[in-house]
Amino acid sequence: MIDIKALRDDPERFRVSQRVRGEDPQLVDALLAADEAWRAATTRYEGVRAEQKALGRQVAAAPAELKATLLEKAKSLADEVKSAEAAVSADQAELRAASYRVSNLVEGAPAGGEDDFVVLDTVGAVPAYDFAVRDHVELGELLGAIDIARGAKVSGARFYFLTGVGALLELALVNLAIAQAVAAGFTPVIPPALVKPEAMEGTGFLGAHAAEVYRLADDDLYLVGTSEVPLAAFHMDEILDADRLPMRYVGFSPCFRREAGSYGRDTQGIIRVHWFDKVEMFSFCDPADAEVEHQRLLGWEREFLGKLELPYRVVDIAAGDLGSSAVRKFDCEAWVPSQGRYRELTSTSNCTSFQARRLGVRTRAGDATIPVATLNGTLVAVARAIVALLEVHQRADGSVRVPAALAPYLGREVLEPVR
Image 1 (cartoon, helix red, strand yellow):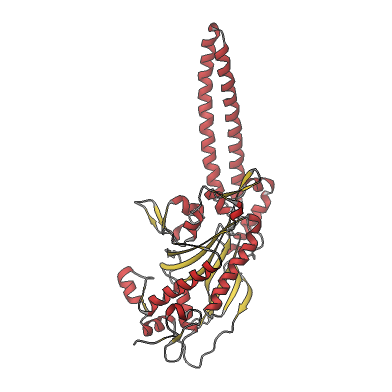
Image 2 (image 1 turned 60 degrees about the vertical axis):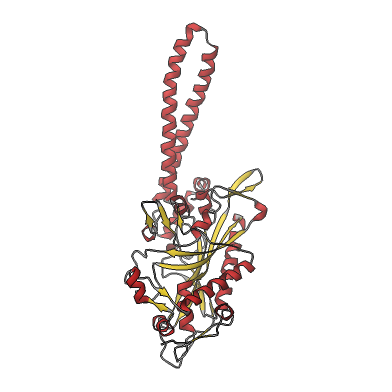
């Protein structure tokens, strides 16, 4: 939810933001109109309510011969108060709905859409092989690590089993990621994977991305697509101690995505799937520190990719490809040899106070309370990390070298073919 006072002061900034996102700037004007209607209704209600209170005092002090007349007037005024109060409630609901239609204020992100990202840095050389590279599907079969056929048999397309060293590889990646985060001061959390509508809506996932979310209609609960959702809602309707900020959490959870509209893309393998596990960093911080905190999260992502010894690049995502909550997003894309290109492995987003306003997460600033800033960052999305690890570190005989930092968690330095 955007800052309505900032909108009143300079609505053109928000119209420009909507345009660079590729969204409707008229939503800003609709929000202004809803705000004006709500304020007018509130003023009217407060006026008739004050009149009602004054009349009540008159009735109490009036002589008997005037009381009947004043009581009749009070009855009529009570109806006006009731009507005015209902108008305030209706206009407040419309104001809330209108405010949820306007995305966070973008300033600084590159203009354009999905293909207009800006490469900020490239780390590591693209590997060269003196043999025909295998993709992760073939490698996974050779290693007895990935079973896509049985995943489809049991659950349908875009599901899979991790078996043998594949299962051990997931656990090793998760443990390495959690160990790094805990060493950096994060509090580990295993959050629920089902959340109420207010948590999903509060984080901005029921807008443009609603079609990608799984909903359990009978229970009115949603399966999360990222532990960002329950972590953001963890302190919902709370006031956080300013001296404890930033408050950083690292969550491990399954993630569920319908991948609506993506059919025909990445149909082979486990790059684009309906379920995967992920370790996610989340930070509540002072809004003034949000940009610096964003760089910290990116730094921890880069540190982890370094431990996996993967060549990668950092990209600044264009405004038209941002989610509604984010004002800036950096992706780290690892090299995938079988595809001959970089693919997203991690991302980190600065959501400023947008989610915190919706969720009621505040901190004290002097005598007032203000929304905190929220930021998120993927430390490891397990399925895609496995894709990159198997392909980048493959050897001619189908074995895969295990990066030195990961080997202690996996208990081996090489993954050997089993078939």
